[in-house]
Image (cartoon, rainbow, N blue to C red):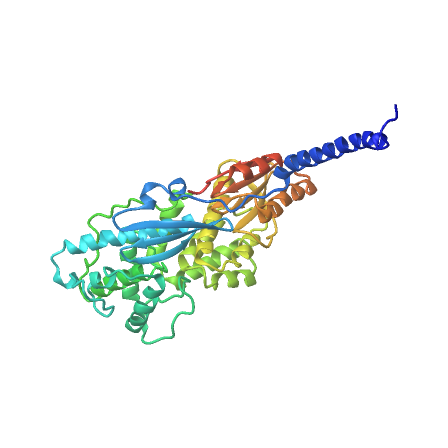
Length: 427
């Protein structure tokens, strides 16, 4: 019997076919195995209920409408009785909501007073009047409207006509040249636990109105009988120091605060160039500078404190100025609770407000103020370099300390790289 002519060829094709299938299966298996190692996380979808406690999400005076993640920073849309705000970071959101609730308390308090000099026709909005509720009780629809509608009249009242501020929500001074009015304003701010240097126009209008009323002879104007605060200020590292700083901020104007800052930074061996650049930095208000300088002074004896001032000089937004205030408190907390710092590492460009330090027990500590850390290309590039730097310096332990949260995926990747992790260190 003659076999088919192609029998041998077909028989040879069978191993080839199975070999091809095997190769395909191996490739698919390799892709499945390797993909988790190589892939990055997409920008996470965040829900307000997962990141904000109820008192921050909503009250009778405000509502947080939405949140978006941009490069690890939360951006919130905040609607309130006093306008709408786009707010970056949980830290600044907390400050804005505190202001809104305190102003609401002020309205209730002033409404209950019988002094008609401080009562208001709420249908008007006239900054030149001393009617507090005229000034702070009328909602507007956006932060830009606040600046455009009110800042011009406010500037005319305080200092005469002036050019418009180039940027919104960047500290630009504006203290009264009248020392009595300035002192009244600081006293009112202290009594209501408001930041006298806040960039929120509504806060400034309220404080100015009360200061004018006091200067005109109504000494009790704006004195709160009770100031309930549903939203606490950010946690502080040193309560005694914070109390002292609050008293000094109340008693002294910007020029005196600047002189004190100069002395503190000089004592820490900060160079004249860095001192001048920081103390004249427009993004940092007198309050930011004063608190940063005095908390940095708690690290006296730690080498290379100039690295922190150099890093802070790169801030370009208000939320970053506040972040550096948080950052120095994080460092002080670790310094005073066991991991004493030996030296700060040279400032490195890029990323959110951060600082590296070597502890006396020879750990590399990477402090980072960021709302959310998730595993994308930027995160991998910045954080994977930390163990490399540590090993090059003969250090075998490294830790990431962040004010925010870390996703499960990023936590897993960092654990694989032998990181010790501390989350939500500030809030």
